[in-house]
Image (tube, rainbow, N blue to C red; front, side):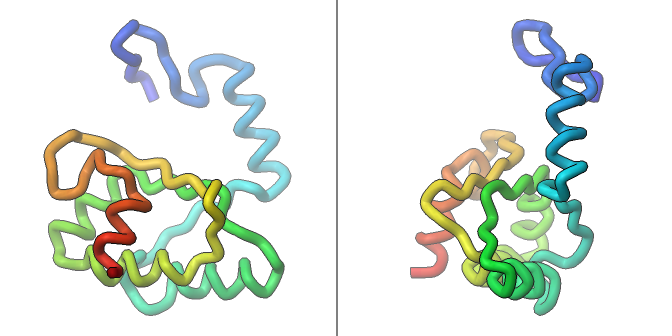
Length: 119
């Protein structure tokens, strides 16, 4: 939360009142849903997908933070990709990812990576 970009500008949602207000508004309308669970397991993402489909909703944005590095390191990447493929997505759905630029699929377009693994 205290890191800055390469220009020294704080970009976190707590960096200023305007940024905080945007996130607070989105969250107050239940448009941000924090999820804790095993993203490669048989329940978490699939249950979310079922719920969203039952309510005619789609995933517009999915913030992964650094979850991918753990899934990949634990050999769970393919299970995660299969689970993500069950989510209701559109071409405009956005996956927000941490990028360390270290290979192993990190820093590569997620949708491209997902399609490559599922084909």
